[in-house]
Every structure is written in structure tokens, then in C-alpha cells.
Image (cartoon, rainbow over all chains, first blue to last red; front, side, top):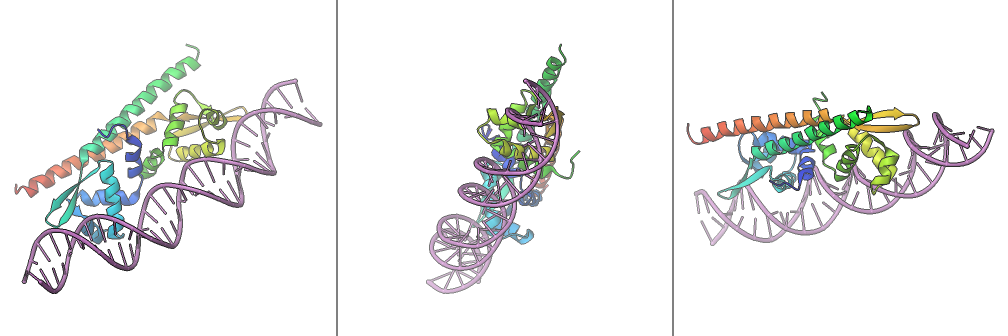
Length: 105
Length: 105
DNA sequence: CCAACCTGCAACTGTCGAGTTGCACTGATC
DNA sequence: GATCAGTGCAACTCGACAGTTGCAGGTTGG
């Protein structure tokens, strides 16, 4: 899903800090404040990144008492990978066809 | 290849205009000037985008007489997709493990 | 040789996004 | 109920990047 919006996902993944956040979340759900303790950026910066990640469906908020923990959605990553693979395959196919035409077949 | 630099590839793919360029190149190799005729941006803007795409190995320059045509490298796209898929799978695996721990197994 | 075309470099503008600080609000704890 | 930790909102700075225009350098064709 999030089908019409592939590019924003890549834009979200095109930032080192967000990968750091994803990596940190990979070791277990965590709140923005908790992440701020581990990463060299402020809590608000992380909150913004989490909003972006949530916007493209890579992350999901979970309320636990008064804090909001975030969880990585691995399936979204896999889905994006699959779609990218499809595009790559389509490209190879089309380029092969063009090459044949160019060679006069 | 281009192994240590996954993030810049995503950053490059996080731009609509660059996808337009890639799509246009998908119909056959073309020069920056030729692309400028098809897309609603100036030739220099396209030249910069092509430089970015070349920098991350998604595109390859080919000199034809006095012009420089660019060609899409589909394999780079596929390779990126595969690495993303690996990461997604790794994530799913780790998250499953964490879930088991959290459930007291 | 001259003209036309394509490329490349440089300077400039404008916008978007990353990051910061400060403050107000809410919920849990004693 | 007062306090404290956590979140959320808003304004601000700053740097990177998309896009533009202008001009210089090369290469091909007449």
C-alpha cells in the first residue's frame, strides 16, 4: 500500500539520521525522548524525523502510558524493495528490447 | 557495488524530476539537450540531475559525436532493491525475535 | 573559415528541510 | 494537589539543493 507515493519513501530513506533512528528502533520500540538519549540530535529533531517516517508508513506510534513509543514496520520496507525490484526488472526488459531494435533485429 | 553508499542512492531516487528523467531515458538513450526538450526544466537543471544520477551509478554517459547521451543502468536499480529487501527481511527477523522476548518466551 | 549546436562552468535566487531553543500542555506519581 | 517526565506546537537559523540565466569552449557541417 501507500502505492501512489513511492518517491516520498525514498526521500525519507535518503537521510542518514533517519537510518540511525530506524537502526535504533530495530533494537526495540522506543520513544522520541529515549532516542534522543542515544543519538546526537535533539528530541524535537527526532520527533520530526519520526513524523516523516510515520508519514510514509515506515514506522508506527504506540502509546504506552504517557509516552509514545515507535515501532518499525518491516513489511513496508520489504514492499518498497519489491516494487523497486519490479521497476528494475522492467527497465532491464525494456533496455534489452531497445538494444535489439538498435542492432537492427 | 557502490556498496558503502546506499543512502545517497535513495536520496537520488527521492526526487520526482529525476524519476521523470529516468523514465524518459527508459525510452532510449538521450542527451541533456534532448531531455530538456521533453521535460519542463532547463538543460542545466537536467545536467545537474544527470550528474547526481551518475554519481550514484544509476546512469552512464556515452559520447556520440559531439553530444553526450545517457543510459540507465538497470542492474544498479535491481541491486539496490535486493539490498533493501535484505534489510527488510533482517528487520522482520529481528522484530519477530524481540516480540518473542517481549512475550516471555 | 564561419556558423550552428551542444556541452561545461560559474554566479545567483528561492525554497525546502534539518536542527535548535523556548514554552505550553498532559499524564503519572507521591 | 503539587511535581516531574514526556509530548506537542511555534518561531527561528542555517545550509543544501533545485532551478535559472549568462557566457565560454569545442565539434561538426556548409
